[in-house]
Image 1: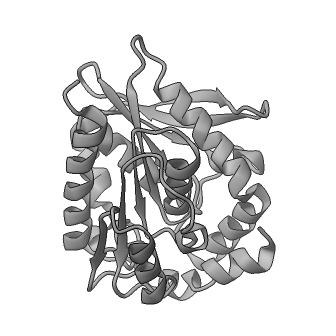
Image 2: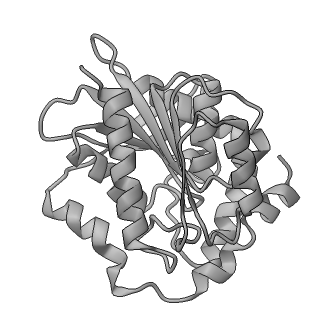
Length: 265
């Protein structure tokens, strides 16, 4: 994956990151903090020997299933940690691997043009193949119980594409992708597990034609389009945040994961 491809796919981020977020930016963070989730940092090792960090959150009672949260191009920042904490409040062991540790360990970026450019550069350096090795290590780590527990994958933007590739190339129990900009590029790959996808109807980075291409190629995959939402609508620290769409997508995702990952365990 060359630099022009990645910059072309992510370049329109800049305009959407310049405006100031609304007061609702900390909604999810504040909600999780009220529930006193105590996250921790762990070290994982990928199959190529690369060691990297991950943020892990545990529910208040022993979990029977896990979910891997795959980051945007901004690293495992405050928002991704809040998402990870939220899934722990829903009964999952949740873990967010630091995919950018291959370039700059522990990096956390903010939602502005300069950091978006830095995030795109790092994503290009890491590449999807190496990032997928780290996602695989997180899935394997999360499954390590006796008996092994099922693991779902939920990814956003850059992580949305990786959630799709996790479904087609790895072995999670289920995968959910939010506005993955390169899913259409890999549309001919067949998922090995149930998949759910979310897109914004006003996403300037993902044309409607690409969403339609995915739907035509995979009619078995539930694809939800939120008409008034743009790119990054789930992130309450970005100008494009849409509370109604984020809430509905989260409800659908949780119901899906409870059915496919927790099931009758």
